[in-house]
Image (cartoon, rainbow, N blue to C red):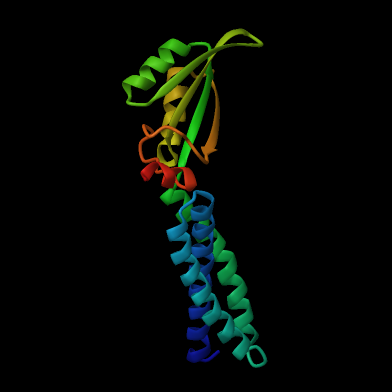
Length: 184
């Protein structure tokens, strides 16, 4: 394999990793209502994709390594894109904690600075509290670990928040027509 072919293969791999990673981040931006970010990411995603695919098609008849590099770059791009998405952790989540020690766990979570809503219910083993904790995706894991420290027998459910009506959720920036109407 010549140096030229090796460099081209490496460039194709890097380009595919970049465009697939941008595609992953663009999808997350769309789901969370960040239209501006999705516009910019989509532009660069397709620009890089067109350059990479044109290079592969240009050398398709002469070098199968370009196709293999393209496929490997796509696979690696999925991995890198998901890793970046987890690291950036855009969005809000609600951690639901089912516990028989509701007032104590809720009080400690509040002392830690979390907003907690407490509801009473009945489970198979008797009275249970359902605690709702709205937080950023970056902090959701810490909230769950803290709840487990306070009550190792608690049951946790974590859900994404698409829309929340309260302006008091830290880092929450409402989007959509309701948010525009409120700003007028």
